[in-house]
Image 1 (spheres, rainbow, N blue to C red):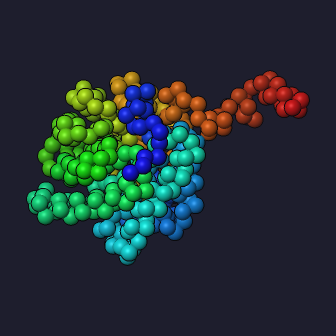
Image 2 (tube, rainbow, N blue to C red):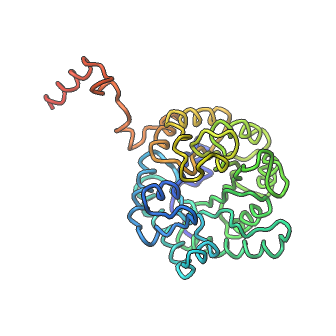
Image 3 (cartoon, helix red, strand yellow):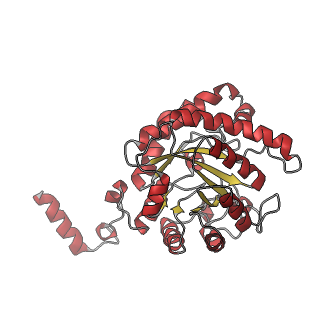
Length: 335
């Protein structure tokens, strides 16, 4: 297996915070390329240019990781929408596109697996075999196409997360494993989120933490507890919504969430606060967009390619400083 990046995930974490960017599915749905409801990433084959463009925007905004859009690109979900025959092609192309855009910058490439909705804690042997087979298919192709590590995410069951981690280990891939904290106290199979992260860290996950469900305000307190409980780096990828519990309980979920949207400034504040408590992988999940990522990267001290177009409100025709604007125009005329 060849890995795309000359600098590994471990090396980058040792150098400082790694900036992540997800929310591909929600953003592409808003742009008209993914159907809300099934949320299957048919865009990979149907409109690959749209996927390339979003990868490129996240890269320019400061993301250190291009995530292959294989979330829900597993056998069961594809069969639900009549595209089971596209399984291999979809998974391979998603990784190829992520590699293509990562090469335009200095980004890692992550394979991606997620909760499958196939796992049943009451029948872990039978359902676990189904989950394992799906992960082995997806990650087998990802290895052949080349990835640096795997993001295994949005888990509601420790049992399913352990299967994902085990497949990653068998394939020699570092794994970032994150839980979706849908319930207030713990996973559906009865583990508190801190204990769940500790178990995955003890089993060999390179990074553990949380993604999705909670917004910045409700995720931060739990992140502090996780950071104190584990030795490995911690990941935080909240949804950019103002939540009092899981965002799944917000009115209008999932396609009428605009009234609860966090601003870029709120997400920048989250990035600073997460860094200050020792979180090593800071990103965003469902609902995230490139402007959020740019603000978060800049809050962490980065200057990104997109920073050229960061706001300059002193030049605003209504809100700006007239003397500053006059000087700027004079300089433009001289140039």
